[in-house]
Length: 287
Ligand code: UTP
Image (cartoon, rainbow, N blue to C red; front, side, top):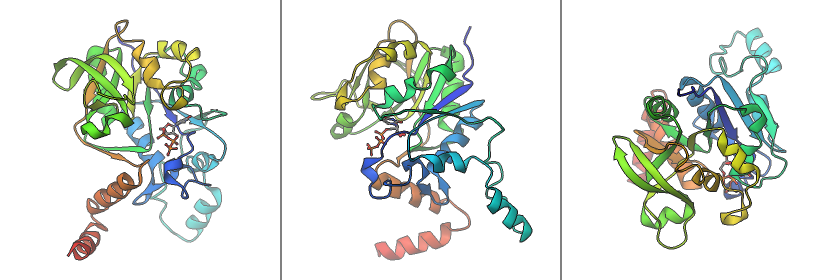
């Protein structure tokens, strides 16, 4: 029987050093694309995909994230008193007792951050979403993965083709048989040095079985001196079904300055309210 994916882990305890000075006092996940913080895009993606429990793995200095999903009493009260519409913030606040927050006391790596959620995840499959990767597609990326998971179960990671020169930045898949959007995963390597096994990198979306937590429990540091999720996932290959899923849509790496600007431009151009003026300005800039 394939257990449904009800829980999603959002690792948000990283330091965001590539985005300094913006991220000195503000969480990277609160950077806005047009008018919405990255974390809200990711939470909406998860909820639309049917996720019932949101789990944030946070660290010190991330309280703005928690406040964003809470009531903003003074703001809401003042806006109501002035007869202003609350439409822009309606629906952000989560139900009482949600999200769940756990702490990663030290940023020891993505694998370690995911492991910090083990008590809340328990013995269930779970999704992991990295909010600094903004995915735009219909249906959304996680929903496409959840639908694929209903057919094959096991573990599914995103799979996205990158240029040869980029493979040393990411977790890379050794591909096996391909069936539509699903590619069998026969191996995984984090930030390969030298020749990579393929051009398929893992973007920040995962559906994982809880056994990965047991592996992370004793796992040491890998590439970059960090406890890598990729290394733990690699140990599940051959023991459980493991697939890469090719997303129908667009990925913006908002942890990177150029990717972040691209996301803002693309999403602004697609908006009915500001799209026309942004387009005219961009065209005038480009001559
Ligand atoms: P990144 O490596 O992109 O994030 O991790 P970072 O370390 O914050 O950024 P840079 O490289 O210094 O600029 C991907 C995701 O994993 C989380 C980050 O918050 C981000 O959402 N993460 C990473 C943790 O929660 N804990 C960690 O120890 C590392």
